[in-house]
Image (cartoon, rainbow, N blue to C red):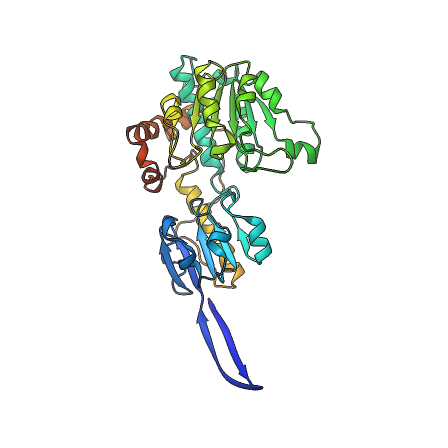
Length: 367
């Protein structure tokens, strides 16, 4: 139960045996986890800036979020052998280094997928209303969206829900996923060039990769923006560097992009003032911040660490599943979340990016 048994043998004689309590570092901003593991380990709850090589040196495990870079600079010389991140993404973790050091890594795939889909469609509906595209929020079947083509770039846990909701709301959907197209065959998939030519909305849901087949770093760059034909709404709720922020500013100024909804930024929390000024929707990396999504993420991290160390299973007091609707009606989406309120808060105080994120009032998912 969180103890490592040690037996000391000298000159073929057993001297003594004792137990060492496992030490666990938990980022203190992870919700719904306080106290659940305290009886099974020596637990320290630390702010991201306090998770340092010194605090990790005698830690056996870490539960973190994206603000902690897990690499040799943090972990060299540490006895850490397990990292759980209460997030979908793992680009803050040097997986090759961890693999070479025998450190097991667990993430929380799909935990906030319904919340991100909620963000995407709340942004689309707000955009249509603000730009005079005659959306009717009481249109239960979503037929007013049927004149739009939606390109979903990255069709994993999040992108699959976004694509399904889009089709359910009457949109023509282009699924852009080169890795899946290569593995499964091109049928049913479109290309980024198709999206640039045909889409009215392009939304990104890829991990951040810098090498390998079809890297996603600056996938949307100046070259891509210059190929756009329909002046689309660009949405980034994936990772900041998937979209070249400076190039997006130029594309908005040049009329290649009609509007942008940006939740993930390059250089967070020191975000681009120029893009903040120009973006229609600008939020502090909270697209996935639903109450249900956070509970799922914490539950998955707890499951992983308890399984790895053979600890008794624990879970948050409140539990949720994955009750994802096939396609909620426009009025249900608009009523469930207003991204313009979060935009106003960030514009009022851009330097509070991290505080707005850490102190976010988790919203309920659309049902």
